[in-house]
Length: 155
Length: 111
Image 1 (spheres, rainbow over the protein chains, first blue to last red):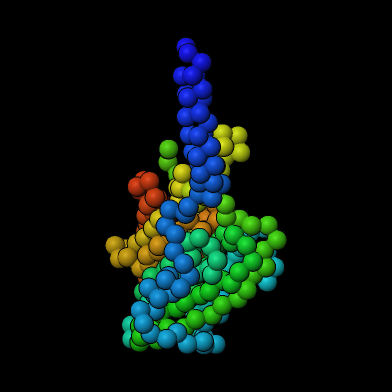
Image 2 (cartoon, helix red, strand yellow):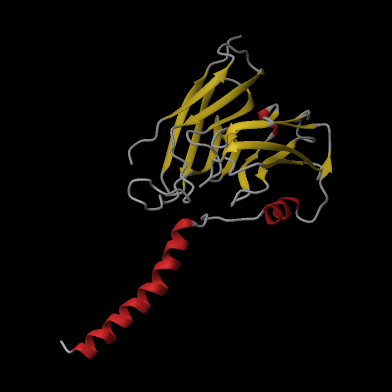
């Protein structure tokens, strides 16, 4: 190999590696959530233009301080007679700062007897947990609680 | 992946017809977010989570759920159900890879 050619090739390799490597490293450090959705978009999709009301009927129970963000117990109850004419259609759990704001939705029928959903969610950091309940008469209730997370659970 | 372990729990254990009982459904599922990196291989673990659940009781769908990856590993979902005669409660769940599993429990009200 000629000395001139060798330096040319060396230059090309150096240039290529300097461009490719940092971008790849960055992409690996911050993988994207498969269904990323911001809190505002998720809330707008649920409320569909209506204004949600803060009501005492909707109760959200979550810890104020969660030691481990990977397991945060959340309980939502809605005070409703659950009859054919007046029942809770759905309950949604949202988080304000997770990459995918949506956590879980439940669609209820009068056969449930009581409107309640309890599960455990992951929180990436200190943020608010929001509960939204949709009623059969078109009313939308909202409740939120801030949860302090000492160890993150997402990513 | 083989069969996913799951469990339906009803509280209280003994109930009467017409009573409202607590139904807990547990699944042994990794609930991968698709954002976590394996510490050994340094590769991103692909997303794998329970996507939807369906509760059928005596041939009637009483509850459906949509779930995303921000629910904890080995999730538990608790809700209520009104007992309406002898029958079977079946929970069908689908994960993001398209695997469909189901679990059922007999409902036997006393009195």
